[in-house]
Amino acid sequence: MDISRDAPIGVFDSGVGGLTVLDELLVALPAEDFVYFGDTAFFPYGDKSPERLRERAIAISDWLLGHGVKLIVIACNTATAAALDHLQRACPVPVMGVMAPEAHAAVQTTRNRRVGLLATVATVDSGSYARMVGAHDAGVEFTSVACPELAPAIQDGDPFGHEVADLVRGYVAPLREAGVDTVILGCTHYPVVDKLLRRALPGVTLIKSGEELAREVVVSLGRREMLRDADREGEYSCACSGDPAQFATLGARFLQMPLGDVLQHD
Image 1 (spheres, rainbow, N blue to C red):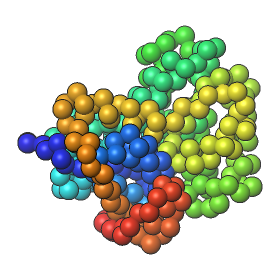
Image 2 (cartoon, one colour; image 1 turned 120 degrees about the vertical axis):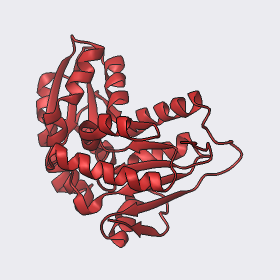
Image 3 (cartoon, helix red, strand yellow; image 1 turned 45 degrees about the vertical axis):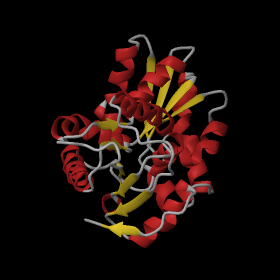
């Protein structure tokens, strides 16, 4: 399969949270075009079975490939845990997920070798982060906390209200007790409440998927000589499986940039 360097990059997530990853990609790769898909009709992913998650990941990847993408970014930690290996074997273009760059960054960052994780139930249950961190440093003490209510509260409610603030305080309590100095934000929704998390975890370094993954994408495309010429401003478009009007409203808050017309696709 011939892949053009001028082809867009595909990005997908369970909802609008992956726009925090797209935001970092737009900054790191300003000349590139992007196609983003939010699977809002099936949000949240955190309570879905691995089989269902792989099914959705395959369907979305097929849709992105139909739009001629040169690389696929799984901007969802839960989908990465469930489907990355499968998509990397099945897709004719490179597929990258958010987890490995975060795990590597966490091990490089921690000073006391105590690392925490905030993530969905499915991501925690997969054990993927624990294995990745352990592969980099088997001596790291790793504390995982499942946060089943946090991503839905951020996406569907007021991300800066009292409900979310109370959830954050409760979820970080085990991490404070464990004395971690580094915490992986294992869901792309969580950077939206960065200030709440930093206040609840004073002195702790937060590892965010968008920042780490953007660096990896730049390196990967550069190694393959697939970066577009820098003398242009790239374009981006969005689609979702749910209500496009609702996605546009929520998405603009997450991306903090105009989304334009949002397509709807099942």
